[in-house]
Image 1 (cartoon, helix red, strand yellow):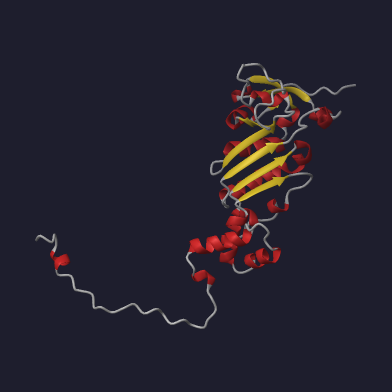
Image 2 (image 1 turned 180 degrees about the vertical axis):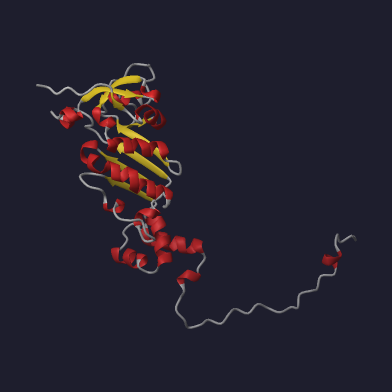
Length: 263
C-alpha cells in the first residue's frame, strides 16, 4: 500500500484518447418497448389521463399487445368506483383471465343498498372479490352501504325482513334485536369475506345521513357518550364500521326464537 492507496489505482492504464462516435441513425420503425419502463409509464399515463383523451387512442393502446395492455390497465384501472344497482357491474362478471380488466384493479370502491344487491351478494363477495384479492392486484376495498337501509320503506310488510331476536357472539350466548337478514346465507357469505380477507385491506362504511340503529353497535360512538340510535351523523357523510367487531358478533348468527307471523 503506497501513498496512492492502491497499486491498481496508481498504475491504471491511461485513456487511449479515442472519442465517442454516435451510432448511425437507422431508417427503421421506432420500437416503443425498447424504451425504459419508466418512460413507457409516463407516455401511457399521458394518453390515458389526458384532460380530453380520444377513445380511439385508448382503444388502440389496449389492443397493441399483451404487455402494453397490462401496463396500460394497471394505470387505467388503478382506482375504480362502482355503484351497484339491480345487477352486478360488468367489470365484476366473467372468469378471471390475463386480459380481464378487474385483475388490474388496485383500489376498488363499491357502493350499494342491500335492497338492490341482495340477490347477488353471495356471488359477489364469495367469489369475485376473493378472486380479485388472491389472484389479481386488489389492495384496498372500500364498501359503502347506501342510505335507506334498513328502514320501513325497505322492509315493507314482508315478515322475513323484519326484526327479531338473534343469537350472536362466541358460543352464541348473546341475544340482540337485529334484522333477520343477518342469518341469511348471502349475508353470512358477506361476513365471511370480511373476516377471511387477508391480502386486501377492507373498509366498511354506512351512510351517516339515515343509518339504522342496528349499525350503531359497530361504528364509533359519540364523543359525549350519548347513545346514537341511528341519529348521529358524525362529521362526514359516512360512518366507519369496526369490521372486526361486526365479524366477531354476526358471524354464524342464528335465530333465537321462531319468527311469528302477524295475523
